[in-house]
Image (cartoon, rainbow, N blue to C red):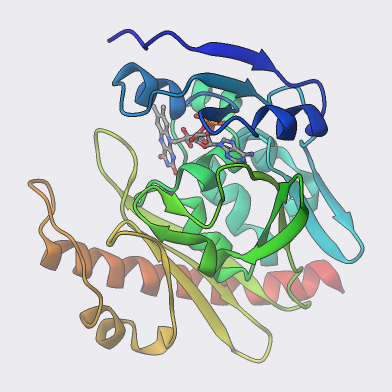
Length: 273
Ligand SMILES: Cc1cc2nc3c(=O)[nH]c(=O)nc-3n(C[C@H](O)[C@H](O)[C@H](O)COP(=O)(O)OP(=O)(O)OC[C@H]3O[C@@H](n4cnc5c(N)ncnc54)[C@H](O)[C@@H]3O)c2cc1C
């Protein structure tokens, strides 16, 4: 299908972008990998597209003791980033490497993925496990929202219409931690039927986020009892995977992610020594 007619502006600065977003019928365009399909299907019909692709919101850096990832960073940059080689953070490039194909990984941004909030997308579960927060900018200023409060439903987030997601902030785990991401993919789309991100701290504390099985990704409060916890989750089913099957896949991904995160703890100790 062909998208409906729409005005287009390319923002030259963050301020320009925020000014343009004052229009209640404006929509942000980043890499266009999700938005263009939605426009073609006319599921959204904005009056104005605000292209933020030229803004300097790109890259991975350690700043003020925190890992900061610009919202316009594309998947392949996460795969290559030297700041993410530590075994405690290895789940991030691992997750990014499994997303889509070459084009998607070179055009699609992580900010776009998080803001789009497809309930089957991979990274949200991991941001929850890692205790990340998202920096949201509006003309009124800046606020930080923890990943687990950001995702509110299918394609629904805490972002207000005039806000931009500018940065993802990850607290670096202490030395001797390990992380991993595991998913079981739909064979045609590559999206997660079930996926789990895990972080294991040196004292054995475990943190797990799950995606693909319900309206939005969520934290498993007691990862050691994944089976019991998932029993209480309202898991959806479709013609490809029933709710029971998806629940089972989720249990498997949680177990696998925790086991690999555990293995990486020793590697991280050596890495940081
Ligand atoms: C063929 C294909 C395969 C894919 N496979 C996978 C997969 O295996 N796993 C997976 O997780 N994902 C997958 N994806 C999804 C892909 O990761 C996303 O489409 C991409 O990352 C979205 O980023 P974008 O920059 O293209 O966003 P856009 O398409 O430009 O925008 C998406 C949405 O986010 C909003 N938005 C974008 N940036 C911001 C911002 N900074 N602040 C506020 N709002 C913003 C836009 O207004 C729009 O609503 C796939 C996509 C395709 C096309």
